[in-house]
Amino acid sequence: YSVLVVNPFYRVKKAPTAADGSATPIQQLMPLAQGLNETTQMTDAKAFIAWLDQQSSVAKNRKVGTQGYCMGGPIAFRTSAAAPDRVGAVASFHGGGLVTKDPNSPHLQAAKTQAQFLVEIAENDDQRSPDEKNVLKETFAKANRPAEIEVYAGAAHGWCPPDSRVYNEAQAEKAWSRLLALYGKALA
Image 1 (cartoon, rainbow, N blue to C red):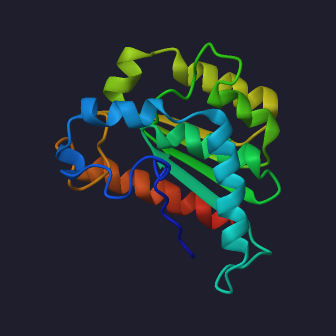
Image 2 (cartoon, one colour):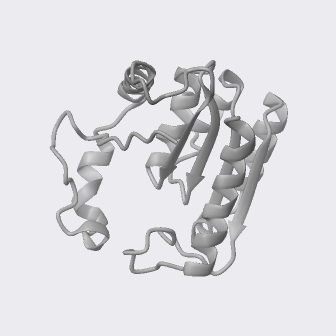
């Protein structure tokens, strides 16, 4: 795989954006996250994929995969809609704000994409928004998009990164194996 890791806050802050890594209090990052919007996310997605397609190491005849953690989940969803002919797989790990009441809610991007989806939900996120998984399932079914949606028992929001205070190795390994399986079939 060729990998591009982006700083979604590049307009206002150079990396590293979280000086203390995963130990950075979320309150310190919220102003950055709240500065993101659908327009810039879609514009950035198109630019990033166009840049990747200019790289000799990128196989332009294969699909692109996009994944996001927390607020990166909505970005990944929007990336698939911004470049529907290029994105074949979308994964969201403990995504925040995937389903909103807004007319531009990230989950509504499913109808604009050709991607397969993997939505991995933390148990405590599911407890806060128990209907979100059902809305996602209905949305993907209506859009006729393949999607795997699962609540990870015993996993707290942020369970995948090894430096997270709530890292859950067994569930993180499961999440990663599901991502690799998705990429194996959707990006071929």
